[in-house]
Length: 521
Image (tube, rainbow, N blue to C red):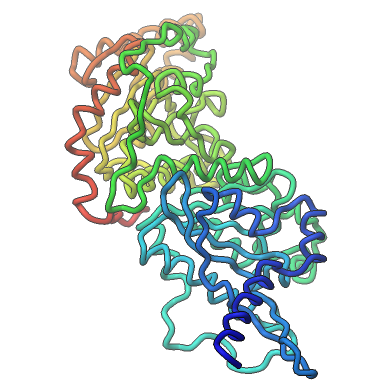
């Protein structure tokens, strides 16, 4: 064979690889309403920026008549590309070849993805659709040869762990995702799944029925209605293009790696903008709820708030935003769910978010309306105090600049999870602070007196009024328990001012080296 013949063979194999599993398999993929992996990569990345690794990895199939050998490409596609001009690594399973269940070369490329992201210190994006290992092994039913990994190899998941502390990792479930791909999906800082086509499974329905005798569909087992609430996946996408938009947006707030700061964007939203609607967004009736997301939107740069994990631990709100172009982490409460009380899931969500902000040098802005840990039998069965205390300790050990704006309630141990170490504290006139909310505190402290009173309800109301006066923000401001008591309309200007005062601290964060976290309860 001449060099030209070999050069021609390279081109032929590249062309065969571009066909993926063949026209019939691609047609089946499209018939299910799903794109092929190459189409997904093309839509996610900046046009023409994909530089593939291992295009000719796969299996050649010899023919007896001396013709050109057949070629089946590896069913994991991997390479470099750009998102909004920034270099990243992208990879995913090719479902048109063996349903995404790894082939030998596909498995090698899959486990190499994290190594590449770490070596070049750029964000990693995984686009998942496929199963984990097969009982027949990666070589298929007729395979022979070595079984299992060499004892001398490093742990397969070591690089997966290292990426989470080094570069941003975003992942999407775009079809059925099971086994190893499911583990990789959740080993990310941000995950999204499509509404109609994705399921995330430890094992599929056939395995579940054989092992447990339970008959369920993929959707019932691991559809969005399961995993958005379980916390295994952060966000839901209307379709694949929406998933790509969310990934691009998520990455826009983050640095390429922990050695750099998040990118500051141009901002045409005035730093001195004061929204009149903030003055009365919190009802004077303490029993009425309000929409804290609207409050957040009015304070941060217009259109910049990007929430994650809304359905998991819904009393806690977390997301990313910008203030005068500076990316920040936003932490708040949704008082429409258990009055914003911190459940076990909410505490886990909050802790994960704090440690994410610490890793990538994101200042935290907390909008506090925390009545305390969720109480009651279900909360005790969930062991809420353990993850709740872990969240409190995570906040206490935060090193990024942190500003807490006390909007309404700030009660009990759980409230401490909303204040980082040396937090700058501002308070609204609606703020209430103390060991317990007035109603519960009065019931505990004055239970006997109330029961013995001629008019128990009248005495209860009078005591609650007096205790509420003691929890007034003016009393705490007089005692210098806040850095300042502010007009709600001043919130955006004061936060932008605070960020500017902390510019030197923000710039010093990467110089301190990778963040290490204490053992949690």
